Length: 423
Image 1 (spheres, rainbow, N blue to C red):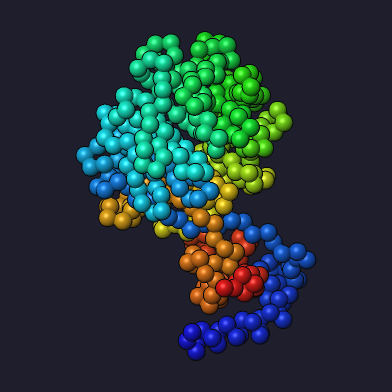
Image 2 (cartoon, rainbow, N blue to C red):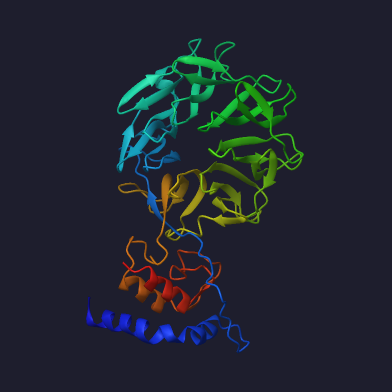
């Protein structure tokens, strides 16, 4: 450690700490001349560092669909000369081509805790598949075509859609149980799209009630499918369900639009708006973190979103991104708070030209980690001192990373949090 850095650190610890009240009052600059120190520290909102996922060699784009608690990711990636994806998995930092080249594309949609990946691929004859440890297995379909898997639980039960009533009509919801295909039925219509299954074998998705173009979210358990309540519209869907039985998805509040919601004990609860009206929830972890996408204004378009309790967060603003980067959606979240999805990255991924859509993984930063290097040290303390004062608007982790507690100003509160998280 250089003498200058050691001097800064000694100054911060010995001199600044006893001056907390006066520094807080002055740094906030509310113009009242009165101290604004609260008796309780402000809760810190999560901040994230970003890993842009690599494509298959020579590919132009990729996307991530799901992540397990080991950080293994399922999704898709293009290859040179094609615009359609191959199903891939990212394991230990490497991208693995699961299905190879097909005719019109493939995707890996989910990954379980033991690294089993499921999805659908046309290279297998438009078939749902299961992949583990390098072994690719097509899932049985009563007729030759077509099917796709959407999710699985840790017991190995896989759900998806299949053509039970004729070729080229993969609209029947099914569950694969040790090679047996179990139809899930519908809410009275002809279509069923299941999206997730939990440890209790509860399945959620969307189904039509009659052949009238209206779709309802549903929950299925022990052979019975029941509709979930909506917000008065005609197009709802449940995308995920936790092991506690909390489902998340979207509901239409009227003839148009969609609103991110959760279903708790049979009741529908709208999630907070990010300002633009439209939103949808895609996944939930056991801590209650919900991820999805939302509009921040009618003009701004969609951004990846995180809901914690009653608060909705714009993940583009909560992440250490480069200028011009944008996270467009969040599709999966694990128990460590790691989040995956798709975004636009100006610099591209390693070896690729900039300005392309790529998959990403967000990892929560430690409380005092200002620069995102997974260590809290003198560099972070100096970043707080150098960034002292009010943050530029609109508030963003990328433009004001030293605002550790996300109150819009860099002051002694942030400095003390860095010191408390040292090491």
